Length: 139
Image (cartoon, rainbow, N blue to C red; front, side, top):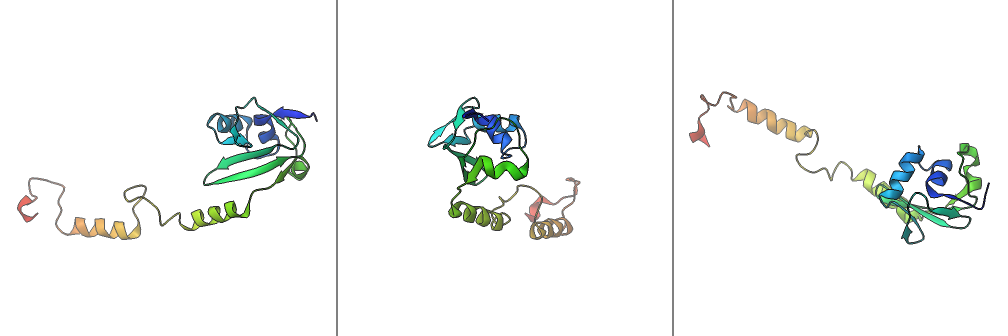
């Protein structure tokens, strides 16, 4: 293992991303930063660098212990990096999981049970798909 490695290869090697192309895409979208600077996929990561990875609502932080460009087994990952993500980030993740169903925008996705009942009652109340027979004066 050398002193430095490409960031996209390192992210793939330590199993943060499933494929190298997904890791490279995350770099291109600006989700990966070293320190406070966003990096491109070809940027070299060095021992001691702090890599920040934005996935979903939280930002994970990792300290580089070894630079590797080849994928390693899951048991060897702790030798290559140290997870230094603050506990506050994990609390944000838990809050987003809990509030996931509450924050659904009205009209997006499948209707809730309550919305489905309102649709059914509207249909049963006299709505007819044939507009010739529908009485618009009732509205």
